[in-house]
Image 1: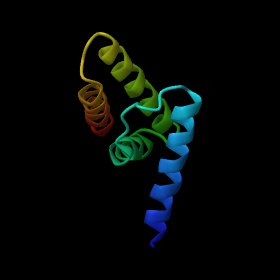
Image 2: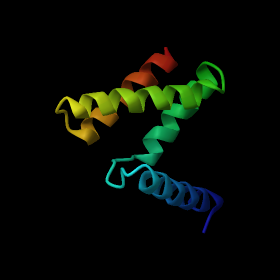
Image 3: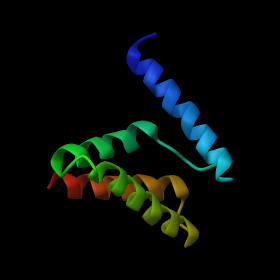
Length: 88
């Protein structure tokens, strides 16, 4: 198993624990997409932009899902929009 596989496993396990703690066990999570957006924000803006960007994308996705949007689509849309903004 590679270091990348180990990292992905650790992050997936951690995400499962966080979702369980927050009572959102069924919340969608595309780990690679989230990490990609965080990486773009960290490198294109400043490092601390990574958690801020992913938090705000998650908040926007949550609002969209609460308004009736498909949760997976809302998350993908919010993350893609944040990625585009950070990369511009």
